[in-house]
Image (cartoon, rainbow, N blue to C red; front, side, top):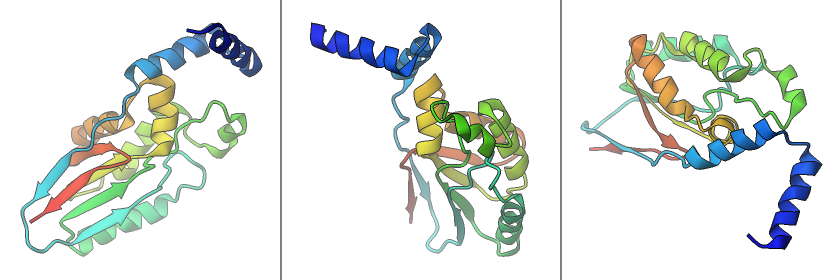
Length: 175
């Protein structure tokens, strides 16, 4: 590392008032922070009905649980073949934005995942989803945790046929 780069890094660490623990967390995120590669899921039908949703931001005070309940109920009523969520399932927790805490009713990974499971457990169809910037920028980059894997596992334990397809990208291949 060059002396100029070292100086710039030290200056930035001081400017940000980063603790040793902040730096360790950041380095752990870098070490494990490669996003999951997009998976392709083949669905072997000629005609499908699906419900698509995005940016639910579960854990944010503006998340609408009545709208989610309505969507799940409609998916059952309309007999959709599957549900797709195209990112920002949970709101994340931007620790570098201290005022965001006032926008949350579920703070941190554990609380947001728990709330997401309680909100999504009524899904009766296969549920394919990706994560996006809120999950990646907070939990993946900050702590090295791929929320999609956690959500997939926990949703399956409550009987939802969930499949995490990747971060920012996933592929559903129709016949």
